[in-house]
Image (cartoon, one colour):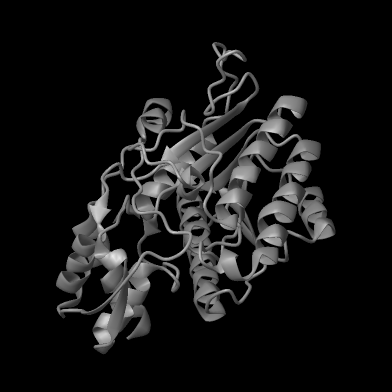
Length: 339
């Protein structure tokens, strides 16, 4: 197939493009390569994708442009006919949305509109896009289920991603565009983002510097290894969304629709306490950490825990990487990449 992967210079987009090329798909990457975090890491990912394309003999083309640039998106769809679109480009980060909400409007709302409108006019068979566990916001019933209400986000970032889910539903309903949204739960692994805890903790522990441990290390996260995420993502993309024939407007199911629209959690289904996560990093690094214990940050939630039964039933998703192994692989990559 020919697949458009937006955000392919990003963490998950990079791994997704790699996996698609390895199985023989043709990939078009689309990324602005901004400076939200170190652009040199993004450029290194792009070089790795080029190397994989050369080694596998798979077709790869990269477009360096902003998804908020409507004409650039339209040119991309005019030049290529896609069998699938995997939309992973977004302004990420919970805390940054408190400082710069306009970046989220441009990337997560305008960019998403341009992509979904292009998919509509090009009659793309299936759009799969990234949502987030942050949409569960003030929910405290565990594990989080796609069938629960998610109308109480706690950050603007989560609000924009919830908006994407609703925007996709309107297009699925009006234009019969098949769409699948995936709510990612705390993805980690090699080539990860420098603004995420694993990266920061590893860097500081290796350097003998303190690490900032929010909520005194007492919150839990459903840490999910990137290879497991990409496996579920591609499985979901391969299977085109269909209407739910038993959907009832009198008792509407928030996860499905009478249009070709669906939402899935994609996580590890095994939440880990932050303190235990730090223990795994210390073990992999071979040093003890110096902890600076701090209160929970504004916009953060104490716990996340994914019910992934729906994704398992639909596409056979089975996360297979435990924390100890996943952290070990990240630390090995970090040491190799940064010397």
